[in-house]
Image (tube, rainbow, N blue to C red; front, side, top):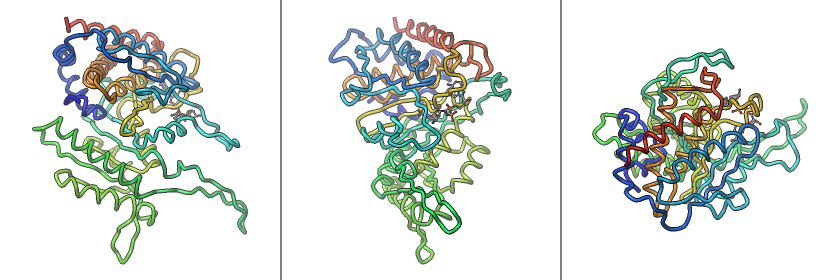
Length: 401
Ligand SMILES: NC(=O)c1ccc[n+]([C@@H]2O[C@H](COP(=O)([O-])OP(=O)(O)OC[C@H]3O[C@@H](n4cnc5c(N)ncnc54)[C@H](O)[C@@H]3O)[C@@H](O)[C@H]2O)c1
């Protein structure tokens, strides 16, 4: 892995590229000398699913096809049926029923389980957008400056084990959900968070910004799962596992934050956070809230990763209120495609990761120059925004010759 590629999920290269307009092209041209295809094609499963997923995944595919001639490998597009034989996957979004449907299980949760995608990495990085009126919500859509945070969300357990039941109590029905926090899952997600913090620190070597992991829990209330209080010593599970892993990284600052005050502080002072690690539900809520700090759900990507596979997706859902209207913002999914390239393994990992950086740079340029979809205060269609990204890609990639 190259320096940038190894830190793929961190967005630090992206930030560096954004501050130097031609850096992306230089990085690309210096590292990718030949473009003839070698080896097997890279197999990518495209899983649009439903709602706006059907609109945004084909847009991300257009972007990947636009960069394919400049990569030393070809893509082979697969479907969910071939998922297990793939090198990575791009997922759109799926609508889930809001009430219990017997036998229903969300496919995204099923895929996370089947492929053991135990970590959900959500970069939260300032976007180069000026405050604009969002015509759909009549809110001002903007991005706060100087944010560069990575939320590392545990992806396999917590309330998402979906063990729910209804019981009859003396005062009527009681709905109960099991929340599972295991030592195994807590330790490996903490390991992921600290290794990501280490890589991010290496990328910004020389910077005064400390490498820091913030461990989020709710130990004051959930005393067993998040922390267990015994003889005034707090030694509980999620927190205990994270602090145990932290001992292997004495050069990384570690701090704890209760989830409620974490939301408050993150909104007040998002710039101070580096890597934030949280159990599944807290991570889910925190990362959606964090997306609002940097331009909204239309821009936020995420990567579900195991030690050998990445399934990338936009953070947003199927957005039924705008599905089929041709106005969904494709940039979150295009960024998810960039994340996918940054997480590919194998002989082409470096070239793929660098192309991920180039796509990020093209997205940033498109954001700064427009046109934009209505969620960002613009009037453009989904395809017009993708067209703009592809135009920026073309001019970035031209510099390689
Ligand atoms: N990973 C997933 O597949 C996933 C994630 C979240 C929600 N969902 C599902 O999606 C459905 C809708 O959920 P929701 O409304 O709470 O969340 P949502 O993310 O689909 O939409 C929330 C709001 O943001 C807007 N929005 C979202 N993405 C946008 C984009 N790219 N461009 C422009 N506007 C965008 C929507 O129009 C909507 O007003 C539900 O069935 C839910 O279960 C799926």
